Length: 117
Image 1 (cartoon, rainbow, N blue to C red):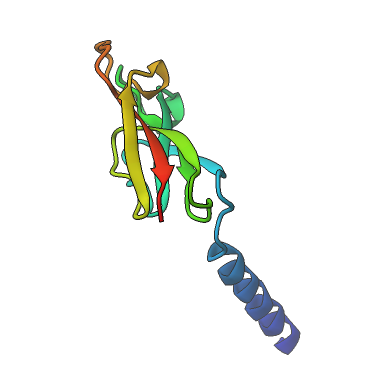
Image 2: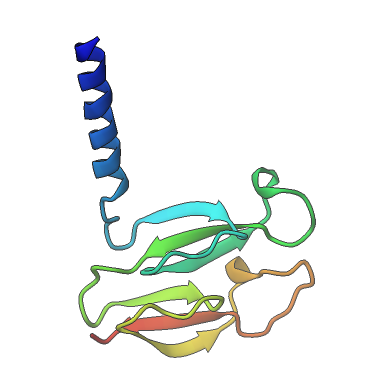
C-alpha cells in the first residue's frame, strides 16, 4: 500500500512540474476561441472547427508564445488581444488567417509587433 501512495505522489509531483513549465518562444497551441489568450501569448490564426462547436463564425485559434524573444524580434499577430508588455505595434494590415467573423471584411485585423524591452 505504501508503494502505491509513493507512486501516486511521484506522478502528482511530475504532473505539477510539467504543467508549470514555460513554453519556448514561438511555440504554439490550439484552443477554442472562447478561451482567453494567456499572458505572454498572442492570437496567430483563427478558423472554424467542429471540435469547438458549431456555427459559421471561426471558433478555433492558434496562440503563440512571445515571452523569451530577444529585443528587436518582429512577429505578426491577429489584432484581437493587446500585445504583451514589452511589445509595440509597428503596423496594421489585413490577413485572411485572422478573420474572426463569417462576414468577410478586408479591414485591418492583424499587427506587426516588435519586442522593445
